[in-house]
Length: 446
Image (cartoon, rainbow, N blue to C red; front, side, top):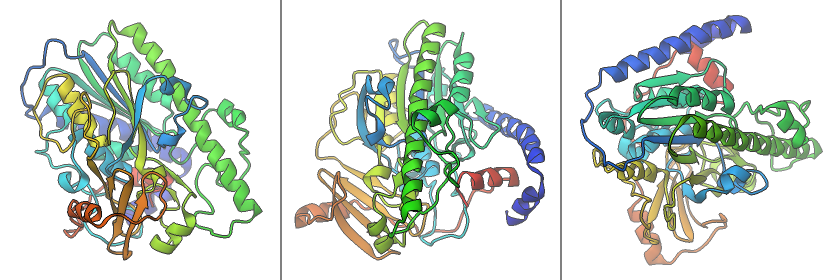
C-alpha cells in the first residue's frame, strides 16, 4: 500500500481528480454486481409496513449539538441520545447494519497494538446477513449513498445500488439530492445515506462560514492543529475557538440540508417514510486534554477513534416516529427496530427494538479504537467503566460528565463481567487501492 500511495502522490492534483471519477464509478458498479449475486432470505413483511425507510447517518455529529438554535429542524423531531458501539466509522457502520457489537461482527482492529498509518480492519463476513439484505429479501429496493470512502469500503456489496462521490467529501445536498431523485417513482425502498460534512476537511458552504464568523485564513482550520497541547497559547486558543465555530457551522448546514431533503421527499412520495437521523460517532474537541495526555498519551484529545468520552460516545437519535425512546439506547438498536417495524425476524441482533420501552437498568458497550491501544467502556446508569490494557487504564467515570467517580463494588463487578474480549487475533485487514488510500489520508486516516 505504501508503493501505491507513492505513485498516487506523484500525480498532479488534476490527474488525481480525473482518476477518481472513473474509479468511483467502477467501484460502485462492482459493488452492485456483488449484491446482485447474493442469495437473499426470501420473506414477507406485514401489510402495514412502511413503504420507504430512510436512515441518514451524519459523520462525527455530537449529541450535544442538537439544539433549537443550531439545528431547529432536527430538534422538532422525536429524539434521544444514543451510545455508539464504536469510536470510528468503519466498525460503527458495521454495527449499524448488523445490530451487533464490533467484537461480535468482527469488523474491527484484530490486534491490540498502536499502528503507524491506517490499516482498515476486515469487512463483515460474506455470510453475515445485514438489515439491508433482510429488507431486500422482503422486496425492498436498497440504496447506499456515501459522502466519503470509509463507510463505502465497510459496506460495499450490501446494497442493490451504491453511490460514492468523486471528491474527498461530498456535501449533504449532493448525497441527499441524488437520493431524492432516485427514490422518485419506486414502490418500496430502504436507504442508508452517510453524510461527511462535520468530518475533516470541514468545509460547509460560504454562508455558514460567515454566519459563524470563522476566520478562513487560520492555517489548517479545516483539519486539526494543537491536538494535545496542555499549555495552549493565544494562537492555540484562537485556533481552537474558530475550529469549534467551523464544526458548528457544518452542523447548521447539515440541518438545513436535511430540511430541504425532507421537503423533496414530501414532493415525490405519497406517504411519509420512516426516517431515522443519527451519527456514527461524535467528535472530541479538546474537552479532556489533560486526562487524555495522562492516560492515553494524547491520542484522543480531538477527532474520533479514542476513548469513550461523552463528546465521542454520545450521538443523537432522531426519528419521525413516536417511539418511547425512554431508556439507555445504542446504535445497535436501529437495525432490530427497523426489522420490528416491518415485522421481520430474519437476523439475530444484540440490540432491541425501540418501538417499546427500554429497560432502565440496561448496560451498553463501546469499543474498537482507531488510535493507540484498544479502549473499551461499559455504560451503566450514572457510571461508565473505561478500560485499556495497553495503556494500563482502569477507571470509573460519571455518565454523563466524565468526572472520576467511585462505583459501588457490586455494581462495578457487574460492569466488568460484560467487558468484551480484547483483540488477540491475526492482523487481518481490508486492502484498498492507492486512490482510496490517498483520499482516506485527506480525511485524516494516516
